[in-house]
Image (cartoon, rainbow, N blue to C red; front, top):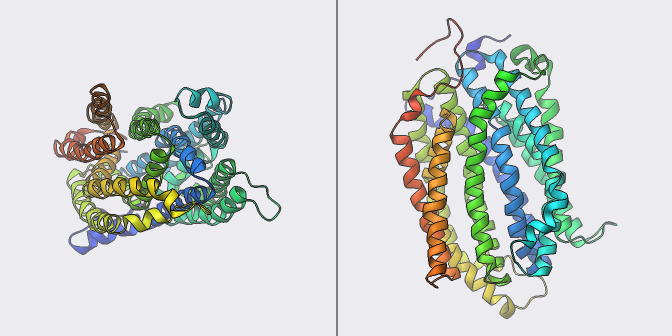
Length: 472
């Protein structure tokens, strides 16, 4: 086994060394998330070129699918934080047990989601969208549910690398998935090379294919003899009740946090859908552009979780705070220019999504609404760096229950309640709803700052330290 000093990367040092350490871990994750974002972007771009109905239906269906999947991925992917904490605590040979409990969770989750194939139609019938949109929504959603095992397993396997700060394999897997997904997306949506034109179903099938490719790359990268010698990735495959419960204790609130965030966005999209396909399509396009600005920065969120997790495994809360301060500056340096670019080029960004064969005048209502929505995104992107960094830090420190309470209160008090009041007072419109959503995101950032600054996370102990391990 390699010496412990070689297995764990040291906490970021002073000056530029600290930033370099964050970038070393974070940039491959940023690149990997950018690849995933490109997958989503091209999926929605091709659908928008296919028809307005297709892109309108894909928005609530993809949000509903992502809400379910990302919630469980928050659990299975929490293997990354536990891996980081055990590495920091000087117990690398416990990592194999962490990994396998994540795998067992993934298999169980994949099986539990299969019934959604049959429940998709009644689910979207309850939403109240136009009947032809309901059918397209159900078609997209059930294919994502059938392929759910792949992203769940990919999150667990990716956590093995991310938690150790060895993030390049995750980047490679994400990029390979994008390289497969993008051409397949085009062929399955529009037809070609002997494949039929499947529209929204083709987009969903291409997404599942990309997830499968990611798993096929990560599996052989994880299960090597070298990794087994260092981390027991082959020897600790059995069910470990204690480790499984530990993963559930911290991972379930983490998954619930993702669920709360996405449920808020999904519910918001459903409310927008009540104003018709044009408003829904404009919102979908705006959120697609938002994903280009936000999702790559989520790689930095994952890096912060890993670095804070390692620091807290070493009982080094001061080192964790230094990581957060530097990461916040890096996130702001990315988000501020991006927000300016979205505001300056909002009309041009909307024009990218005009369906083929649709005259500019016919697309104008969707375009004009979308430009306003992009201005809202530019405004709340100014503070999104706080959400990205502080929530990642709290996750890495194990404060997942506290974040759950914060997000729950925010979703109810800052989003659901204001929009409900707007409807009761007959003030609801696409403009007032988007204004409420913008305020929600910005106020949530203040909540994240407050939660982190209270430092309750300093006292959380996720993993045991072996006798003789360094304490900080």
